[in-house]
Amino acid sequence: MRREIHNWYSPSLGKDMPVVVYGHYGFALLMVPTAAADYLEYERFQLIEAMRPWIEAGKLKVYSVNSINTESWLNNEMAGEHKAIRHNQFNEYIYNEVIPFIRNSSSHDTPIYISGASFGALHSMNLFLKRPDLINGVIAMSGVYELTEYTKGYWDEQVYYNSPMHYMPNLTDHNILEQIRRSHHIHILTGSGPYEDPTSSGRFAKILYDKGINYNLDVWGEEWPHDWNTWKAMFPHYLEHKL
Image 1 (tube, rainbow, N blue to C red):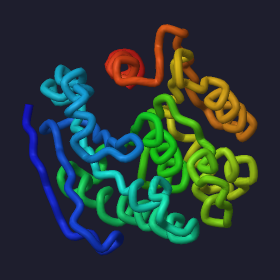
Image 2 (image 1 turned 180 degrees about the horizontal axis):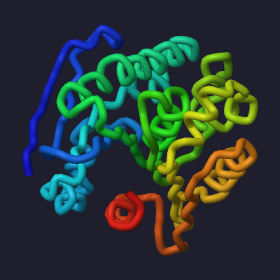
Image 3 (image 1 turned 45 degrees about the vertical axis):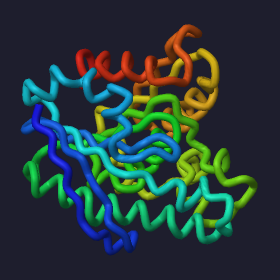
């Protein structure tokens, strides 16, 4: 399995940001880390190894980026408004730097899907819904889709616009809605075991349903907790049967 690490100075974030790439061909899968983790997290916890057969067969090429959550919502020393600003800078980094990097290293016709677990699921869903012209679909595992779960009571317009559970019911832009509706890959996955919140996934799925958006909600049983063994089982299942 080919593995390359790329690094560049990000104008959006004002710092060097590494990206690790696995594979040589196939659709592009952009991975967003959980919570305070880094770009190698999915490798350390063996999710990349679980995807090895598809990567080596040229069915997908994985791009994993760094998180900046410790510079925003997980940083208890920052003011809420500054956390929101940093969150938006991360969004711009993905849209203006990472997506063009993926295009340049694959092709302009290559589908790009985005995925993450836990806090990474919220980021992935949010990034897809805001720019469905750039990202073709999402696989969100064990997420909650209310940013207020992480803001410690802080609320402003930028929290609203990065919280899918809040802004999606009020989204009326026909062009954006139609782009979202054209995606055949909106997958909301969750277990029902310890520390999972399947009711959050169900509430968010209902919002998509009310907007006429096709999605796949898959709630696994109580033997599947909020943990890596769950995600290592979920992802190969979706590569085999859904993508």
